[in-house]
Image 1 (cartoon, helix red, strand yellow):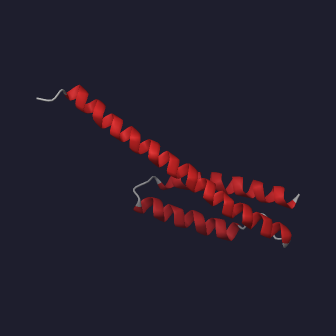
Image 2 (cartoon, helix red, strand yellow):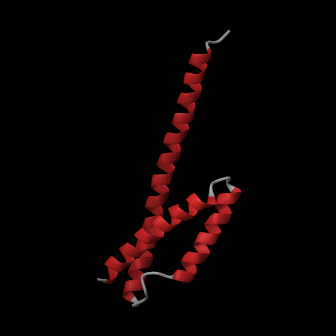
Image 3 (cartoon, helix red, strand yellow):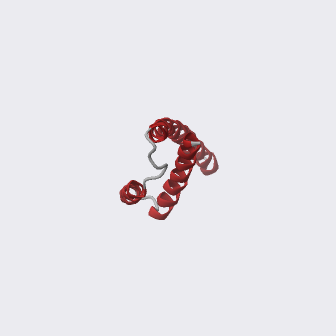
Length: 98
């Protein structure tokens, strides 16, 4: 009969490997997202557009909340996460306008 502690250690190792891969995906995905938002910020600065777009931001938050529900992720967490990203993007856009 297999040792339950050894089996648990193997399962833990597998979960941690998956978490590490997903963390890498998140970081690279955020990096790619910020490349696009930087380009948006430059375009807005070049055309004297405001750094934030409250209508789009509200739409994106609602969209992300729906996606979170579909993904069985806490919608409040998803909303807080997107709000954090949006604030960072706006900060970058304001830098482009300076």
